[in-house]
Length: 592
Image (spheres, rainbow, N blue to C red):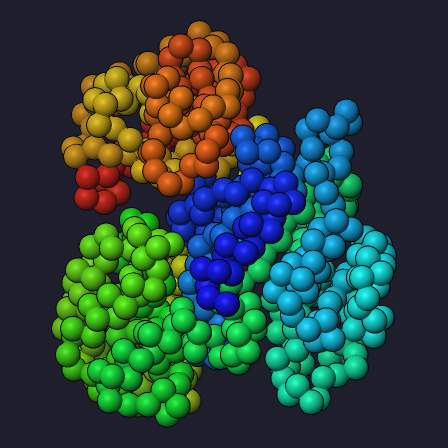
């Protein structure tokens, strides 16, 4: 089975079960300050998991492109990737039920559909499947429904592991919020003649068992005082890794030997004149990082020392170092690899062709100028067997070494690096996110407090006000909303004058004082266009969209949530206006 056949089989299966197929969202999350990248299919569905009505209904499925950097140090083995595709299906709380409780389906039906897809569509060997369920604790009971459902389907008790929260519980993303037990599915990829009879609590991660699917049951809400209360809206959120599953169904024990990686590996072998079997880790890292970089660039990010741009820079430069280790001197290798990657994904993701090679080449050119000097400087610094945080910062600021590259060089020599001191230096000398420097970006539901809803609605007023003051060329390029402030990126070539800012503030506050109603309508994208709704009309939208109208002042495609009337908002103020990137400005605003 090919990757495209697997994608199609998954979507067709869940479509036959009443699910609406929705498009993959961007790798860059909208209105979610908890993450730098979309790390799972649930991120773009945040408002709907929190109670908003989805225009495509309460049963959804898609193939979502994802970036995860928390496992970046694991890249180099057979199964970990920075960029991957996640097959997912969701059941959202059914708004048509009188009490608002329940979902289109929940545990039993979700598990039965998972089993049917694995055994009847993919035709995986039932005797090689094992599962885990939540064992229960003081916060929530043993997941008896999940356990009993698997048993009824034919999984023997000895292959149903009962595991604690650290293994079989999702969330909450922060200190509070939706969470619940999950059930994970594993497939035996070890010696076919030595399939274990059991899958036990004391050894759930035997190297032969590969996790391929996870069904999450969001049925609790963790409160500020640490209590776990039943959720009014119960959701099912599942995720199956395309790359891992593709390898399993084709009896391949190395993801990098599937069609999604093999052509990249073969190109590296050809150019380096070295064998994958001898330089396995190096070639896997190069293939993974250049692919991830290509996808990040295709969603509008460029290398920088901040946020997503920093992760991109780190990936490109880490790949460059391993390319140098393979003694590849012709920089054309980067263009060759991008061409191969574009060919692999040309049907599924045609946007990969957006100037990707030129951006990577520019970054490589800049990095190569300083790489040799930086490595020589590292050698001088490490003579006493350790690197201070201040020295690591010099390597970062002067030679463009991501902190993780300095760590990697040090680890190879058995040296230590003072990470705490480095972070202190970064805090003092720049605004680089601490999470970015640690390379840890954890996913989760965005805040859905009343304050966040108010600022979300305010963003609509501000965008329309800017279009009136600055011109119709103004479009939203990104936003980050917390309960304290609104950060909003928009297309505009010039710095705003004081007069322009004052006029925008005046217009927004006038709409707030007018106490305009906020209404939502569901319609097709074409209907939204004809209505004059703002939005970037591309593949991010499904067949139906939600259009929020603020009186007669503003119409915009948005997922929500919003307040009911603008009179709830308070006084609008712009705190700061600055450049974000070429042709893009950034406003930080508050409500008082």
